[in-house]
Image 1 (cartoon, rainbow, N blue to C red):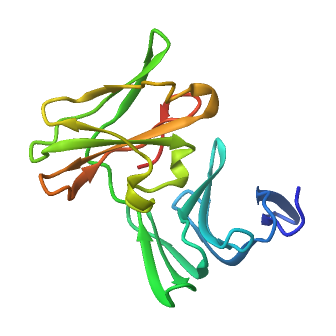
Image 2 (spheres, rainbow, N blue to C red):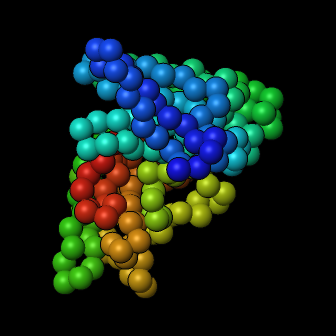
Image 3 (spheres, rainbow, N blue to C red):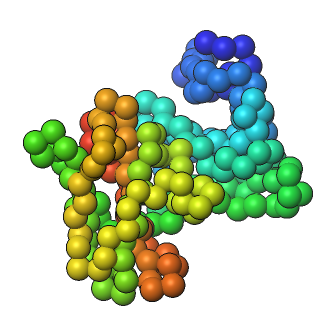
Length: 210
């Protein structure tokens, strides 16, 4: 593991246990730690190597990491809390704009499912009655990306009209071998987001956290 990587330690009786969370260099500054109702750790921290805010939590399957804000120089002085639904809320400092920022997860309102049909990935989702259209987002390791943060929607793959609730990968997109992950948002006629789905995909094409 890299020197300067963030580690997590806990004590079991009289014995301390240590494990790496993120192997990147200069990671874990300004860490904020909290435990959920089951005693599992959740952390927000600053990746000084890349200058971004990261979030990580541990469950029975291991550690899960997310890039929360990828603008340069953000994430110092992170403060993390979990709400009653155990969704993270993070306040942190934007060193470029010299502002205090706040990040939280928008609850999913569209149930998104991913299946593989004849070697191609097919997405299906719930109807949102107020939507004018749906925007399909996808990228390798999409859990590290939140729609609206990328310049000019660089991860928006398609716009699907209301009345259509399915979409299939084209032109080589969505290769399971490179861990493509997807998310769908519903928008009104002005392009304002009304709601979004859970993420679907990853290497096993299972549903992950919203």
